[in-house]
Length: 465
Ligand code: SF4
Image (tube, rainbow, N blue to C red; front, side, top):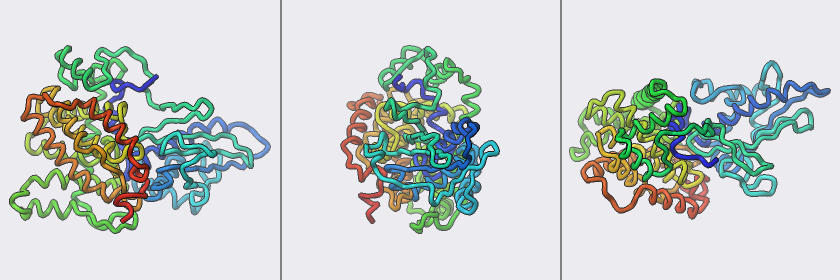
């Protein structure tokens, strides 16, 4: 069954995780956690031999930039049973050094040999002499002595989403609940259909999503409860980022700037023409500095682009005194745009470059802002289209594979663009030349045409220094 935009929940798009990357940190941690669970049955099988051993192979972009993105540390955390949403970041990053010192993973009382510095292998762009099924491919191998007991391939497809790859059938298998085939009251798979459903039903743009999610078993109460937790993590992340200072980890010697910029802002020292408009930039940088430091963030839709939405929401809350419900409604509408991009283009920097991460986030933030400011569904679609259109072709070329340069400032720029896109659409009547659906097909094709070196490989562009 092809994935449709209307079944993707706001809780799929916004996931609490840890930095620095949703595709290279959160996804691999989830895949390792899933592999850990899947081998429990294998371990029960009695055998003459009991010399269990795990090897993890990282391919493609995970190999090229995995060290900078802490993929190895994330895999270790998943293998010992941690999942991103509940994990304490301080404990996550201690697992790998602990395993290097004492190379044993214990599952249901059974000891399995696993020494990260030897058993995590950073490999290339071919697997078994064939191309990769996805730029972010992993293979987990469980052995008993020399015998391979299980060999599973996993794909990290962006935004913390993972899929298992069935090598025999050549099929990608989602671990999400998307296979739920409940009939939806307001089905849509394109922006055009979403607009039509909103208009035909007379419902607010967020109510259409709520009704669909209720049909899939997620009540409005439960959805709002979880969105409240997500807003809390976003707020907490800005606050922490505005308090912390020092050098970010990874060896690039990037200094945290959000705190000192915020202090200047409060003392009124920015140039008069900049004024308070620096707020969205500073809030976005605060979040992305936290992300770069491996802290707790919300994928929005990815970790690399986690700063825009918290920043836009905080800025508008300060200027408009929004209620929590309004802010939740904004997240719901933003998630529709993220889902449309995921289905019709990609939210993975390794697949389509940074247009898929910061570009998508900008479109989501712009659409959510218009919804919170009571714009029409046409204005919501227009704002999202502006957000995407003006990121088309943006490459992903993080220096040293770290989610720092250009990522942190890129979120600041994206937040400003999102607010501008929202303002432009609110000042117009929602009629515009290029539809969001058209922009997404251009985005997908642009990503396909983009040279591999600009798709999260750190082998081109800014990454070359
Ligand atoms: S450049 Fe963009 S897509 Fe690439 S890692 Fe940074 S934020 Fe993500």
